[in-house]
Length: 431
Image (cartoon, rainbow, N blue to C red; front, side, top):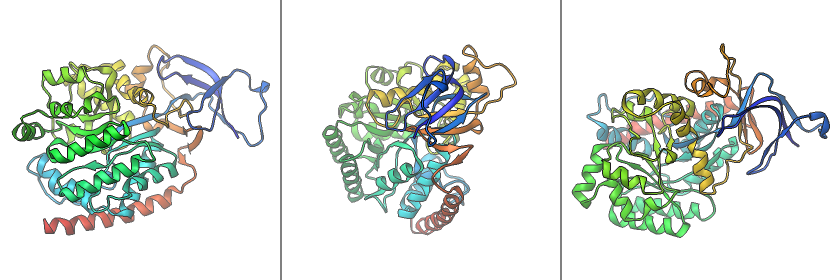
């Protein structure tokens, strides 16, 4: 069975070249999407699915460089703290409580909610950073299996940390080791200020064992730097560099807000990728991101779990950056697309040429190669995503998920959200 997109306006994601063509999409991992000028000259089976894309844009699907599945059920939750006294209190009294409240069903519901939102907004590859201290063993498999059920490709890690005690840190290390033994993934850490020397040493051993990279929050707050200086006489990036983590092109450094010039030089001379999360940084009043002095080829975008819409993140990065960053249409789009280069460079599965979106963008003005980036920032939205193809298979058709029941999923996620909020209230009473 083949998937055929006819009468398409195909936009090459790298060159932005427009081609009016038909495409035959292979339904295999790392498959191709081949141009076919004349469909009458090929054999079309009755089992083949043909989608007319006349007037539609077809291009490569999207990827998210940093997200938190665990935050998917936080929308609308009751406030545990009316007015947190800064980000550290928000972490301790809200997010870390939420993490501790997660069990098997809540993790699955969170993964389903994330997968649904990602797929319907055009994302087929997700890099997640997970934490669930009360249910560590097997948590990554739950997320992986759930993503695959919906049709998403992924790169997962467990957020190793000492904040819940060394036994929980050990369990996080074991979960990581077990998962990487048979699946692609990364070695996750929360942030430098919650990872002691012994745990970080064991993280480095797993990184070396699997030739992997770390996925960690870096200098999201000034406190992260202050703690590191007071306890290790190093700034965060110096500490990570001491362990060799910056030498890997698989390493993902989320945020990187409070870094000085010599740290930027350290990053320029490294192989690590940085993931900007513009809306989360502003929502948490942590300040804006600046790309000045950094390598734009290794700068990606994430959502930090606020949502699953990378088109929205790219717009936010551009708009916020007009006041605080050196960013234009081209560099915003580059950050949006650099995840594909990261995946390819590190030979991860799940981002072949047969991962596509069909965009129903009925613009009131002409769209062409010369002005596409303007439309990318100011016009195209996730609402325009009509069909989504992952590994050659249609996972969203006419804006509806295929192979799973959306109403059933939403019923389950709402039920588990109420359980999560109730468990959080109980845990907060004992803190």
